[in-house]
Structure formats: C-alpha cells, structure tokens
Image 1 (cartoon, one colour):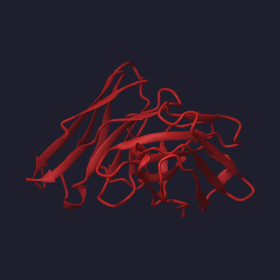
Image 2 (image 1 turned 90 degrees about the vertical axis):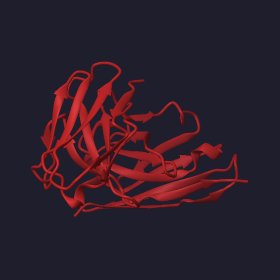
Image 3 (image 1 turned 135 degrees about the vertical axis):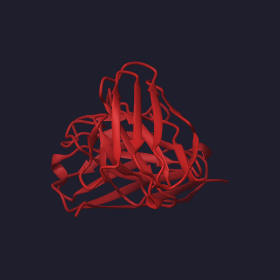
Image 4 (image 1 turned 90 degrees about the horizontal axis):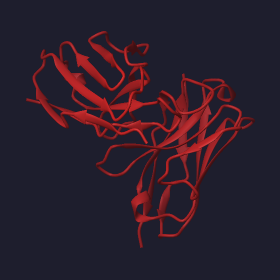
Length: 121
Length: 107
C-alpha cells in the first residue's frame, strides 16, 4: 500500500523559512515523479512544484518560483520542499503527491494527508 | 498558463440523480485531463485520468469524456458517498493547473 507522510509544517512569521518532508513507502520511490500541491483554507487546489524520478528535472508554479525549492533523496525515499521568504498567502495545507509518470507533473494517483503551514505575524 | 474553468461551482442533487460537471480549458489540452474527488478534511482522490480512463477501484458510475477544451465528469446515479467537491486538472504541460472545484451538495 502506498503511503506518503508529510511533516515539517508549523506557524511562521512572514519572511520565514522551513523545509517540508514527505516520507514515501509501499512503492519504488525512485521510479516516479513527485509533486507538492497546496490548498489554502477553504479554497481550491494549487499545484506548487514537481520533480522527476531521478531529480534531474524540476518544475515550479510562477507563484513560488525563486522562493521554493523541491528536491528528493531516493536513498531515503523522501521528498522535500524548501520554502523561503514566506508570505501570508502561502498559508495552506501542503500535500505531497505521487505521479503516474517518471518525468514530471501529470496525474497524481496517491496523496499524503498534508501538513499545515501558517504564515502570520 | 492554461486556465481551467469548472461549472457549476455548486450543484444540489438527490441520491439517484445523474450529475454532470463541466470543465473548460483556455486552450487545447488534447486528452490530458484528470478528475479528483475531495471530501472535507481529506486529501484528494484520483477518479479519472487521460479524460476518460477510470482509476482502479473507482466505481463504474463515474465516467469522463471530452477532448481539446471541453470535458465532462458524469456520475450516473449519485450515491450518498459521492457528496464531495470535484476538481479537474490539466497536464498538457508539466505546469499543471486545477479547476476551481464543484461542490456536490445534498438537495
């Protein structure tokens, strides 16, 4: 059974930084692209970033480009998202999602339970 | 970026009703469209990919159709477990975008 377990969320001040992690199990992590998708309270889904299976290609939404960095450690079956220069509008539940493909963001067939990031002074 | 527009934003229906949700893309995305179901406090669940392919384990009352810029998700006979919010998502490029969501409520 595929399991994705996010961690690292919390309450931060504007301008702050943190690193989100997603521990994967139940599948061959190194064979699949992974993404981060976020959801602001009471709002819809917003794709944030994706990384190919070998980590060689990364993709970002315009809203986070230059502030967020996605990475992965296939030896640890873990996906990361470094988030810097946080803004109030970054307040959201961040989900990690497994892709059907190996190359980038396409279709997300498994999701974690999410980790909440709150940005407030 | 490709914009995805869903309609309606809210839909009231009864158990047993046939329900159709529409998703329109701002440019052609061929068949690169997925549908997800999300219940309150839960992560989204994949229902349909490549416009019409049913994800394993999803009931056959769910179906998807469309090509290019207009797509539909149909629930042939609404069940109590189907009251939720539904999102479309395009993946014509690796910069994916979601629709705004359609909340299916009990009438």
